[in-house]
Amino acid sequence: MPRALVTGIGTVCPVGWGIDNCWEAAVQGRSGTARLEIVDVGDDDCKVAGQVPARDGDGFESSPLRLLDFYRFAEAEALQRAGLERGRLLGDHRARAVVASHGFAWKLDEFAAARRGETIEGCDLSNYYRRPQEGAHEGIGSDFGDRYSGVTTACSAGGVAVLEAGEMVRSGLADIVVTGGVDANINEVIVAIHSRMGVLTRHNATPETASRPFDVTRAGFVIAEGAAVMVVESEASAEARGVEPIAELAGWGTAVSTAHLTAGSVGGEIQALAMQRALDSGGAGVDDVDYINMHGTSTEDNDLSESEGVRRVFGDAAPPASSTKGVTGHLLGGAGALEAAFGAMAVHTSTLPPTANLNEVDPRCGLDDYIAGSARHSPCRGMLTNSFGLAGSNASLFLRQP
Image (cartoon, rainbow, N blue to C red; front, side, top):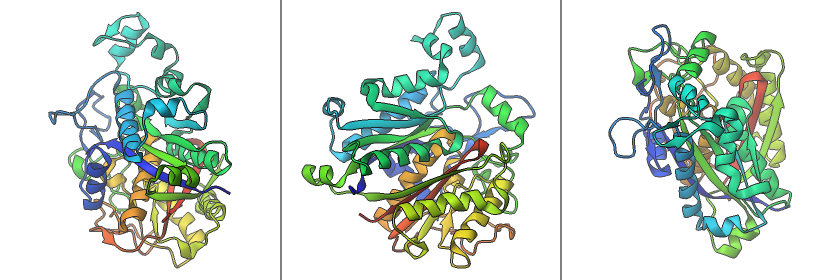
């Protein structure tokens, strides 16, 4: 069976543009969350977000088409690092793309203008108004034609897209797959919806430390934006091109709970099933995992149920775990892809990033080591990364040294 290798990574997120900047911030535990500035929201809503900094370094990116800008930057970086030319890749019938996305970032005035058929900042958004999610996917994957697929499984979408890429390569369906996730949904409607659901942080006075996974003072997640793209390639293709792999995408698992729209499964049962299936898919056991990048949203339900799921799989011998959402916030549809990229970097550099803003672990979370404080430089032969979404969609990936 062909092995699926990660040969290129590209990212953009609230801490900067490019995988080097993003990974450095994750390792340093340097937060990119800040006071919400790119949209105005109601007085009762969350005032904190993970906004992508402007390319010129002045404020934050604010464009009707910034979702595509984020994706195209991340894709270009991933292809460059993998030594691939996009034009040649598009002509290769053995190349595919699978990307997760939730749609475009709409301000209410932009939505109304698009409905009237007007242009905004010179951009015609009418097609995306008529079919916002499909429009986003068309903009991302149209060049690949029928060799492209889009994923919209809420906050697990980025992880699901990556595992589909692994399946395509390992099954022999494709030699190279461009995969990842992107989101740019910081707008009045999305912020208001999540605020009313009670899942967004209320730490408005301290935006830099508002995302506090596993901390006793956590009070909800920080909505964020950005993109992560990886090149997943067969071992034969990588060897033929003389490319050194970053990591192996060795296993994956999914499990769905229909018990509740937002709550995790009782006792972490379904999350545990996704993790166990990822290990089984990779022919691995619990002793092969040196690190877990947790979904770790900084909500009470997720942090508790995910920790319980880890304990179900690993018992009292759980490996070090952390959530990088303390640095990046929650990229929604892009989160799983960004954290998979961080997982590949952890394997590649033998560095385990910390859980930023974790000062006092909630004792109910129950694991011994959430990597509080600073990063840990330690061998990382293999790692799990978890992506759990609304409506009970759960995905786990197992990456290891190639």
